[in-house]
Length: 262
Image (cartoon, rainbow, N blue to C red; front, side, top):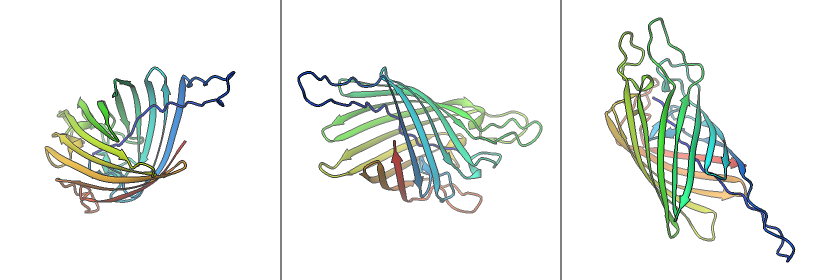
């Protein structure tokens, strides 16, 4: 199984000159670059641990153009069970998309390409695969202090989603659909923000684990101080997934994060 969590966005950087008659506000740059580095107590996505309940180090960088187009690279450490060959220790996501706001609605469309360096077929005739592509689309809208977001991720039929990974002969390609809704709000005059998430995975595929489909949900809070963000989140599912160590990677639990943005 392989999962990823990425938050994409184009941040407009505007600098204003002192309010003097001869000065004008400087225009926003055509291209902006933003990055982040994060340590998480457990890398979970769609409710399933990718690190067997252990810490993960993550980081990413996004280059955005004023037109709305952006490209991004994001990576995380993972446990070796996330791919069929048991040799993956990193996940690298390559992203390209377009994001724009119209009348208060923000539209975001693009595609993620999941790469697991070091994964290769295990033996002659092995038709399995690890890397795959997943297009996505989302709509978000601010209602007072609350922002609501709906997202759809659809991975078309491909080798990396096949149920019979590692088998010789025919490879039963599968697809995968993930639908999610998110709510977020900032508490006025404080550095605090609250989040809520509900998602549903439709399978069967290598992504959906031991069941054809399942639901995941989460509640969280963050606090910012300068360029640092501290977060805590409870994540749970209605499914199970037993890792090689005997742990249930889908079991509910609290996750802590410390991140820095630049």
